[in-house]
Image (cartoon, rainbow, N blue to C red; front, side, top):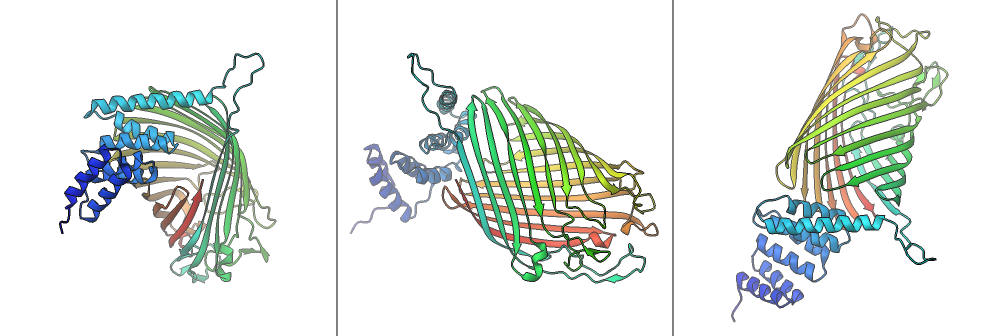
Length: 512
């Protein structure tokens, strides 16, 4: 019996495709794949056939695979744009069409993509404008009241140093009795919970109004670790102005936020509730913060600039035996970005912010903190620079540097300069899988502060190494599997601050 080769099955599939027999063509393409053929052209033809047959999710997967071929990437990008439109996702379609438009190898595809972009933008503008009726008593067509987005994630996590306990025994130089402290490093499992919801009303052209809620919590399963449970939630409302043309883009965002954090103020050496003068102060670090923020960005072909402003009041739980952490927070910042090529850019930032505490007394140069001293005020100046380079359509990396100058406005005891060196890598494999890796090394240079705030000790030093890897596997349009690993390592001659911690979590996320 004669058995058709993979090439013959592929050719027969192409014949069926030309005869508009798309399901039959897909059957032949599948048989060709089973016979050993695995080429970008097979994926491309199968993707177009899925699109013609109305199987848009399968079409997207096949075309994304084909787009990794330098020969077929332009045609695949254009067809991915058409497919995204069929899925009812115009923003995704715009992204694919722009890739097809901004290449020079196939001018005819570039022209078609440009026409498609203009058509989508005109349709979006038409949807945003009120419908005018000439009839005397006619009313505008009813418009959708708004859009709702919701996301929820829950899973499993492990933590090898729940209370951030120092890794070695130390002599506590802050205590006149100079006790030897042996920290207890405790590990355990937790349930991570995250929820986000936002309702947006598109009342005017280019402008929308929203209300949003976010929740994030971590619940440890062992009863002995319950002091590490914590959660934070935030409610916000505001508006966003977004106008985009072929030459420029402008975004103005404003919001008012109210947030609350709850947890236990624990002793990092053993995880117990902190006790001062025989009184437990386990709620000391719980707070509510609220205030407005606004930011804007103006983008052109290669250059963009923006700014940010924020003001918040932080109200902590009241305690009678120690000063409170209540303070005012104000931030102003500017940024600018230049894109040298389609694949590389440089961004610079400058932020100045202030924390002005209400009753927390300032430190003297000898490390003491007299109760009658004026309240703490810290002024910060951040200067940053980021460079990013795209390697492929799926992969890019970045290098970051931030220099922070903090000034203690009393006598300068807590002044420091912090230099932070960072790197990041982002990988997207089609629409199903994404990977992000971040890392930073921070060095603190204290000009005056002592280790343990003890004037007989040496100047305080501190370094911090932090890294994270996060991966997202989209299982369907609504479900994703999300994994993350976070590493922290802090070293300091103030041993109370030093610790090493690894956290891992895996969650199932649902979104609409």
